[in-house]
Length: 87
Image (cartoon, rainbow, N blue to C red; front, side):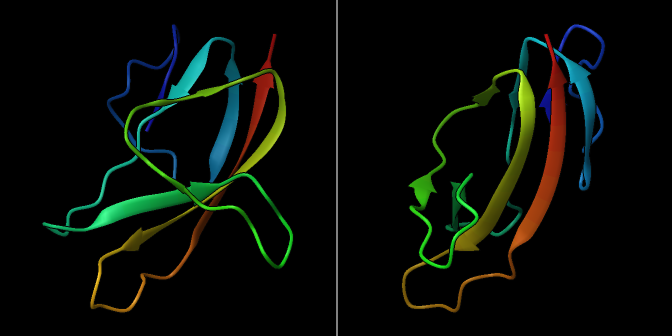
């Protein structure tokens, strides 16, 4: 869910979109007990980060990858969204 001056964070943007800076992304998982991992890396061995608070996006083209993770369970499928953040 992107949050900016023009978008109050009411609707998700599953595929991304173009937004004016400043923008933050709020991630949500409906599965109780699951955590969310995210990365901006595109390579085969990305550095996954644990989501704990809204993610600020800086001007430029950004691809965000995210998945739900829970110890003892399979990871969810990965979701990708591309954002263009205008200054």
